[in-house]
Image (cartoon, rainbow over all chains, first blue to last red; front, side, top):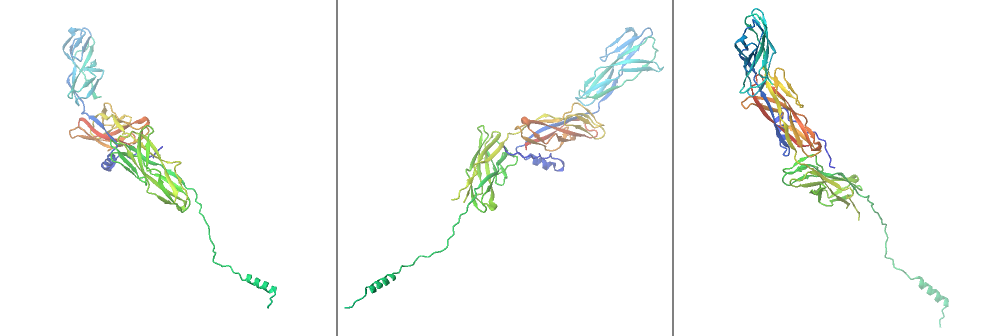
Length: 169
Length: 165
Length: 146
């Protein structure tokens, strides 16, 4: 059998002599050279801006408790039609970020609405879509909610805030 | 009448006989005889002729290995591993001169499956002085690699003759 | 007349190994994924096993991948692998660039059964407030018999 010489392979070209080393490495006419691609996508921070608040309109619970559901698609359902008036509509957030990227949205389960007098009401929040594609760098997400107003709830304006998280995936 | 004694005649006859003489022309000297008895020559191979690992091309080309072992890789070919010239060690009678020759200047390498290549052999040594009773010589070769030569391990044999002169 | 001895018994051998070209195909690109830059320079590293480490002010998303190549050649041979250069420049095609330092999983590979695989790992340097965009670059690996 022909002899086998254990020889080590030359080191990869590094450092200041890179160009010369690369030239020497590539002069072997019978070496096979293949290209690979390296890639990365740099994204801009995604921003969520409220365009419309979550509104439940006016609810009369003087005679009985009322449940008002506002769906992300804008439809509403009032347990007692006569008790719900005014405009009820979902919250709308405008998202901006890197075009073509997909983002995930999360929202807290509940929000607490409070009145100036210190009374409170709970709202269960519903997210319209947990994932959205930023078409041309934009998207909209709706957040609905269900409010349960017990009978005899103290009248007044109730306000609250909730937190929406948006992130690339 | 004079009378001689018979005795006197006899004595005269004897004297005549004693006067006969032989001639002298040969000479002599010392001579030496000698012979030198030689020990049988032994030739052993110390290295095979190895061309290395060759990547063929679409054109026929050659790979030459010099007696020094240096390899010249023909245009278009890829040559790898370290090549080696053939080498022989000769042992014989101290101080004698021997003649060296290749039994054939060509050899055929085969892969054992119908693929073959020829090698042209050569050596610059035609005679060798056995200083200290031994000597060495190398054999060079040029391998003829065919276009798109089929891959595999190719081997062949060659022989040399060494004689006292 | 003195007689000689020829070396015919144990005649010398001449031999050569004929090779066929090595075939190298890329089986995976080096992908750092999606990165949200920070206000300071930081790095994103991908190991040979594809695991990504995101330098702390950065945020990383998407699926990363180490580079990978498949080599086919003469069974039992050893090949040498090299990178023409260990630095690759990624560009968005609009004058924004980043640099990644590359490393091979091995510089020599034994073609057991006639084939083998090797990988490329990398460390990407993301500049402070790196401009948004899709960046790409190319690197060249060279494979040769030993």
